[in-house]
Length: 244
Image (cartoon, rainbow, N blue to C red; front, top):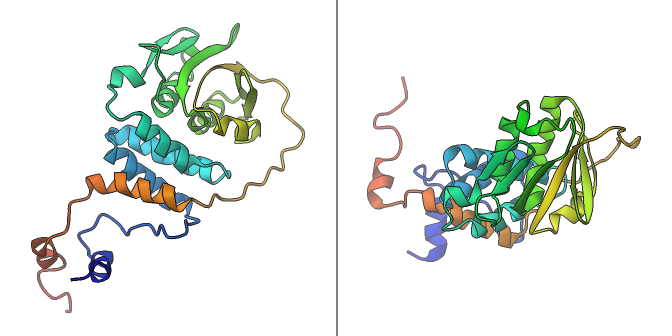
């Protein structure tokens, strides 16, 4: 069987976990398609189901706002290979979410921890900012900070040495998100934001995911896919007719 024939068979194989995402020229995927692909890729890279679901959500949230969430997640999956939970998960203290060993935190683990503590003393933000980091690929924090702001019903500003991004309680995002997308590791502060910018008419173009990113995410996702075989194909489908 040729490679082309094999691909044709596997594309219609009901034992697959889902249809392969086309990678020839990149693709403009739906939010759900990005979320599911990135969830599977995160699982294939070794994330727990819970964190993988958060990773898929974060990548899709960013993509619908024109930011390369899938690319940032892919970069983070490579950075996280072989690292223990202790290395990527924040050590939490009042006003501080830091890395245990001084290395880079996983933004998915940090974002989930911040949301879990949104109404707890560790993130009070009454008298002082909350310090976070160092964190890798920090653009992936933005979806979690949007949830944090919504939970607290107040604007939240992420500030670092070269910029700031404001997330509002109603889902708005303002500031230097494009600059944050270029950062690979940084320390930052979270501050309560007062006045919200007057311009709330921001329109985002959905992201075109590159062929390279799609291919690598698919490679991670395939790690959790059971390879097809003659036995699995023979056993697929209903055992009896479904006509009454």
